[in-house]
Image 1: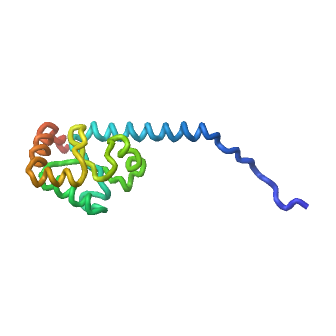
Image 2: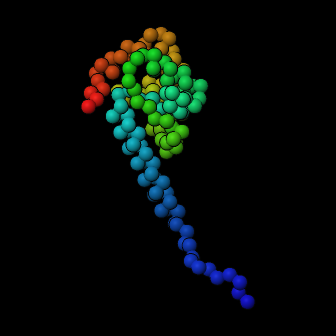
Image 3: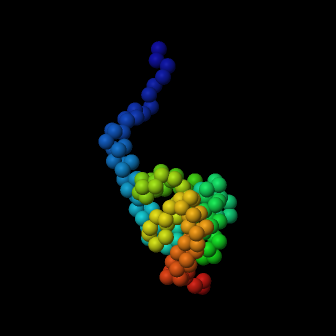
Length: 138
């Protein structure tokens, strides 16, 4: 007596298909990162948000950027695991947070804090913000 009957046979996806899908996903993520960097002259990739940073390094970095007194964009990498996985490869920088200004990686917490203490960060942020004024609210 047969107790079990197969309803549908699942054919495994060939490995090559999985590799191709993964590569496509990676490329889409890289394009998303490039677009974020291009569209936001001052961009901080961080853990958490400026109001609620989720790690000490992100908290220090976002505080330094906020002390500059200019608008900036951020991406919470904890809410964007695809970016969290691919940005270190794209940037050739393994850790977070990452501050990008006018398409250039400035660095992580240690570099940003050193620039802030030496007085280099404030003019960089202010000059960049002046070149890219925020759109007027309607």
